[in-house]
Length: 422
Image 1 (cartoon, rainbow, N blue to C red):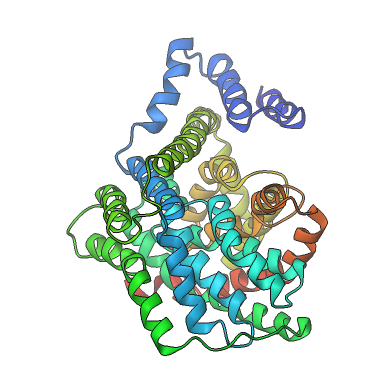
Image 2: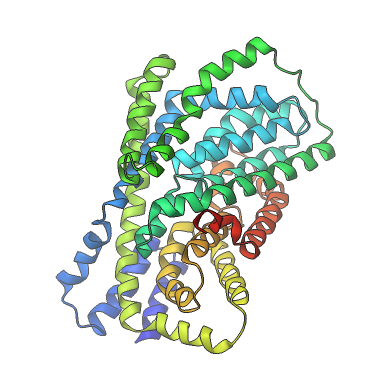
């Protein structure tokens, strides 16, 4: 019966069925045949999966990010960062990386990030002589940074799946996220020399000050949100709701032109679509994970890993390879829902730090978002900007290598993730 359930799952994936349906059908088959659950109990798993206080943070952070996009603060933030570093070698791509890191952390969506930052930066990069490949590649890679830098939607979902403290995961992701952004900036600078780009004039002091004042409300938003969480003023879920009100206030005060009902509706619709996708995936994943736990699949994997008698880092390397393989064919969130119920007990049995495992998991899933043939960031850029997929994929390769190197460094230097807890 176990093989039949996995066969159902694979067949549905191959024919292009939604991932939530593949998870739900295979999990439902096991639950009905093996566990003997009545159909009403099976369907209730979809509601049980979303009945979590921490998951309320997901739609709020998504809405805050969408409001940043449509209401104007994101554009002001990019203008200041570009004025600050745009005149340096690789300055404009570096500004795009930093902007994407901040914006992505607040939006929680790599697709929204690459579209928003790409709309601001790609045409300027091409105009200055950066190749189209590099212009699209740096946006595709930097769009993934928000999944590591807090407040991260991936960290929230990981915490909800494993009962870890999301606040601790947020803290653990700060230094690795900054390190990965630094690696991407280094790659961007190296490639800029190859492209022989034109360097714009340094912004005047008055322009610098003016853009800084305009961008300051958006720039301090992460400080306000994370400071409130770590200072014990509010929980991550409450922080997400506060983020929405914060963006609305700064947009009303500093971006009157973009503060329109039409833009507000766009933000709401985008948030509802993304939240619906995530939550229905949670339902299918809950049913799938409940069934495989009953069938003792995690216990079997754990016993197998323990009996291998190899160093922990070798097991972790195999896990990363698994994530990268799945990343070629599936979206990041379904990968998390499929693998975490199986791999997490194994990691705990090896006495591996669960917080470091969370950081490694998110770093690996970031790579999958620019890994062909199913990299979500690649498709988002190609589709939105009507650019040939080959151009986007080719440009992302140097940054893909950078992400892999950064992930391996984080794996072998766990101190980057855990030093604050020592």
